[in-house]
Image 1 (cartoon, rainbow, N blue to C red):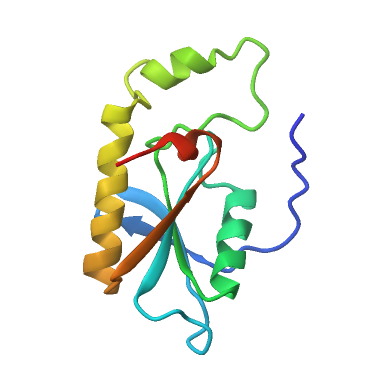
Image 2 (image 1 turned 180 degrees about the horizontal axis):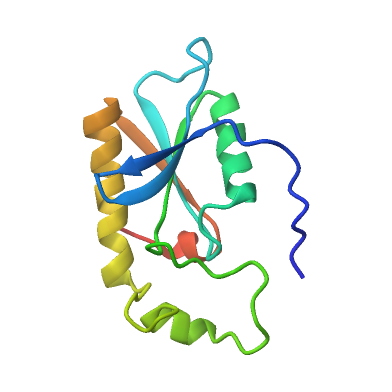
Length: 139
């Protein structure tokens, strides 16, 4: 069972990335910010949730603008999954059968996120970090 007791209040902001994806942006204080640098946080299967937001906020506390983007088109794996949840079916087709979470569906979201950071935020250097599902993304 997953510990849902992620304590803290997220301080970042809900945004729209590339005009089409939900995102969360944690921005460092101006006096701590690494100039022209950002991190792209590629999430686990739970997507943008309390824990990922708090982790992004911590990275921002250390001077890194951090973007999390919804890789799953509003269809992350529920933290409290039903006993019959089929992870492979979810990956291939999504919860409703028409929202795959394959490389072909996810990679363009990552590419758009990189463009967003460069074009909308003037970022020149981008680092990426990924957990579980996010560790395999290679856009």
